[in-house]
Amino acid sequence: MSRSYGLKRALAAGAFAIAAVSPAAADTDPAAVLATYADIALAGYEDALATARALDEATDTLVANPSEQTLAAARDAWKAARIPYQQTEVYRFGNAIVDDWEGRVNAWPLDEGLIDYVDPAYGVESDENKLYTANVIANPSIQINGQAVDASAITPAFLSGTLQEAGGIEANVATGYHAIEFLLWGQDLNGTGPGAGDRPHTDFDKDDCTGGNCGRRGEYLAAATELLVADLEEMVANWGVGGAARKELLDRDATAGLSTILTGMGSLSYGELAGERMKLGLLLHDPEEEHDCFSDNTHVSHLYDAVGIRNVYSGSYTRIDGSKVEGPSVSDLVQATDKAIDAELSGKLDATVAALEAIQARAEGGEAYDQQIAEGNAEGNAAVQAAIDALVDQTRSIERAVAALKLDAIAFEGSDSLDSPDQVFQ
Image: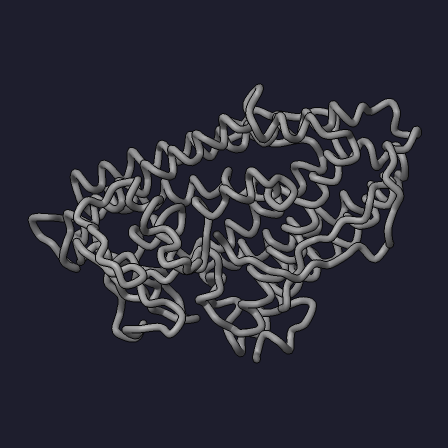
């Protein structure tokens, strides 16, 4: 799955006694807050599923009729699919069912040489990964842990059951959004210069094939998108009425459920987004550390992670059809207990979204995220750092919300890039 980190950032406010929500919040039922949270999860995953199905159709059209137009349409469908999915990432960390599943659909970074051809500058071997350049698209048989494995049929079952994290290596990402992204764009060979990946449509054209193995490349793309749809169908079911994730959440007492919500908010805000997805790449000025590195879509994914955090706090989600799912919220509970803390956190959530919208505006103006983190780009670096600072700042206010609700102390996910930046360079 995506990067795993042992460091935790404990709440500075200390250990709070386990207790029910403050009596001052009695007019907002905590159980109703949990129900809103579950309803937003269901709606978000339903939207992610709908856009994944549209992506599946677009990639099927590309494989059946490769052209510049069908490739562009498939790329557009991939970008559209990222918007609702990223808003669901706040359901990680606190919900074990989501966190255990997430690596199937959004794991990164990946050693793309496992999947397909790569530029010679990528290298031919890695001390950490014997499958670094296995190129399963070109090879109907590969070696995993010294054993010959039949790769002649590229199916969803083969990708998920054999190739994903093959050899026990997390960088062997064979499924999910980023494997599909690589197949649609190819490597971004521009470093921190302008331009994204530029795979030609003829890489899927069996009659006018570039890159070799065009039929198998199409089979891989078809299998990966089919698998993405199936994985999202599973998560929709998990959040539906009687679903495992909804039941696990609602069967807890109110304090445990609220802690789940705030754990996801704080961990995504601090260790995952501010730290591993943003600060690490900025410290290293390394485009390989950007989340959507093949498509240069990172600015969108980061923004909608932040929107997702705000959604669950405010108890309101805008669906892809423009309708809203909303109801009693954590914000309501905090406001009833301490209006100042609610106003502070709500304001900081808005400020973070604004800081990430500023990064988006720079990207849409022609300076992609990997250019913004480039060494020597003082203005771009400052824009990214401002968003990191906003995420860290809002995490402090999430901590204060935990205290206001008199919940037990929560350990949020940490990151060396924030907590021990010197270790990043060792």
